[in-house]
Amino acid sequence: MVRLLTQARLQNYIGHEFGSWHWWMLVILLTVPWAIWYKLADKKKIVLVMARWLARIFREKELITVLFWYIRSVVDLTIWLIFADKKMWRELLPVCFLGSLLGETSDSITHHYLLWEYDYNTSVLPELLNNWVLYIVVIWLFIQWLPTKRTLGRMFGYWFMWTAVALAIERIHLKTGHIIYYQWWNMYCSYIVDWVLFSIFYLYYKLFHFEK
Image (cartoon, rainbow, N blue to C red):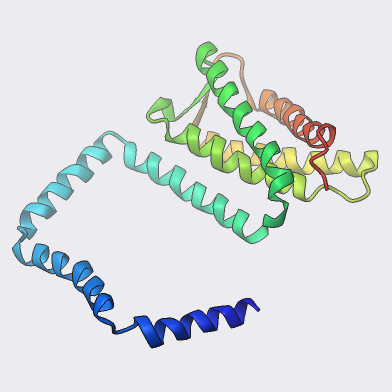
């Protein structure tokens, strides 16, 4: 059915829209300004401005940080697009939003008591991408793949697997300098917190009957 509708729309576009006067008008509006700009712009000055901008970013060590978090978020979203069951969004999004809010709360607490931080607080970008991309992807898949038979042994193994994944992700950030620990905080603290957080997500999912 979807394929037939797509074919019908394509045929309608080719038969009635493609090559019409308003189609050519859109092509002109999209191409002519760029052609005029390319013809009149001072290419050497543009290159110089871009070079100075990139040099300033490199000097401030911002580019590598931005690229790291953007690339990681692209990887996160790619994993979500491949593996996530989008039909479960009604039951999974409330749990994901809870996780993101808990992430924002923990960031505020750790900033106040200076237990750890991202990239020496060079930008708010790491926190936003961590709390509203990575957390959502991890929690979505964690709830989606819950064992059908939830015996104590199966659930313990499932928790162990996901806390190991979370710890491995954090260790990568720690080793690359994108997370910095302070005072008494260490990987053991993070590991304990991961067990608590995954338990909270599961209990929230069960107690409020999001499961279909």
